Amino acid sequence: MNHSTLHHTLQRIIPPLDLRSCLVSVRGEIVYKHYRNAQAETHIAKINSCTKSFISALICIAMDQGLLPEADTPISAFFPQLTSDPDPRKPTITLEHLLTMTAGFNWDEFGGQNSFPRMTRTDHWVNFALEQRLRHEPGTHMEYNSGVSQILSSILMQHASMSVAAYAEHNLFGPLGIHDYEWEQDPQCVHTGGFGLRLLPTDLLKFGQLYLQEGLWQGEQLISSQRIKRSTQPFITVTPPNHGSYGWHWWVDQYAGQNLDENPATPPTGHENHKPLNYYYARGFGGQYVYVVPDLELVTVLTNDKRKKEKPPIDVFPRLIVPELWRLAR
Image (cartoon, rainbow, N blue to C red; front, top):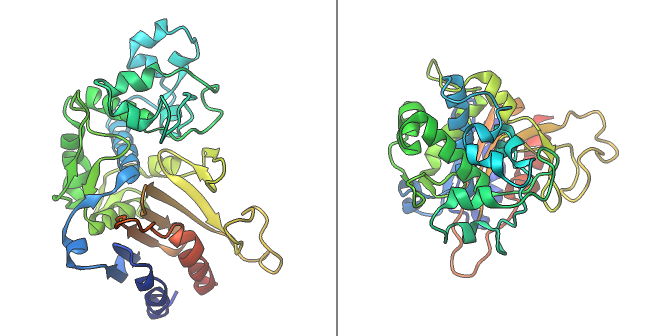
């Protein structure tokens, strides 16, 4: 792929969208960068649910280090009180069910009685999340749930014998050179697993690059390649309006020449011989994204802030960027 052609293409697409930032690197070299202003480059900002992918990374590191058991471990190993829950399925929920949002809890992420805003108004977030009744058999249905991310953060804190942020500084932020950050905590001082991390766009790019390099950073294997692969492969197909699949707190999708509203499994006529472009991504409310496209050795970071009552442009990458990448790569 010609870098100058890619740069020219992005320069046509990105500035009119008034994003907070857009960074694109190929093989570790930044080939395009756009900031709304100087502050966007130098000030940390909320990454919202991209925090979930950082929790996934830290869980993988803790598994690699033997601090946490394997993904098929039931959560009753961490919360023995669940063995007396009236629903016998609840103690059988596994770490992988939490990571893939398939724990089965009856949860409505943004509204209702069992939602993340309601959780944040309680005095014990983890207990609130664990106490929700099950609506689905664990492992069968993906229900987006920041409560399970908080449960994962709590499990990590329990087993790392330090705060999640301190563990991140030792094992992820430090090696990546991420020094400027803020991270919210719940009333039990558990760092927020589903949101609440503030970072610089360039540090989000490093995080994506670490995954592109299958966990290797400057000669050091921060996360085993086996766990990177497992956490970024499809585990369960997501329900509309979402597209693609979900892995371990990462979204997974592909582009095969279709419009976003078509079924990706059926490329339109004329595209049958072109290999689909697979990618995975971290996603945060309001336009925060880290996209990794392994076949092109490409990482894209998009950040936004909702200014006044303007809605951020949605689906910038799948609607506007990935079709151009696919065309340029052919």
